[in-house]
Image 1 (cartoon, helix red, strand yellow):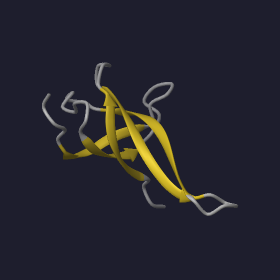
Image 2 (cartoon, one colour; image 1 turned 90 degrees about the vertical axis):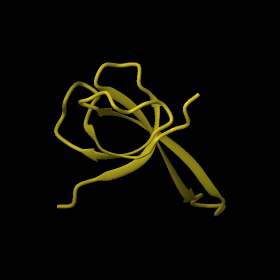
Image 3 (cartoon, one colour; image 1 turned 180 degrees about the horizontal axis):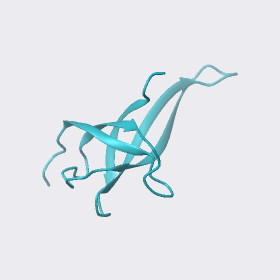
Length: 83
């Protein structure tokens, strides 16, 4: 069975060892065909607290780590702008 992976943007790094990653999904509307943008937020484990807001990351599904945390940061693809 394949491991689920998603690529998204870190929208919050306020928690300790946890980041919130927003993953965008573009799919056509079932009836009208227009491309609809849907966003889902995942809580992901970040052991070293290296992810910052604005970073692009790849997350991988794992065993439940807490009540809401089921994903782990696999790699940081791109760093966000330093502002």
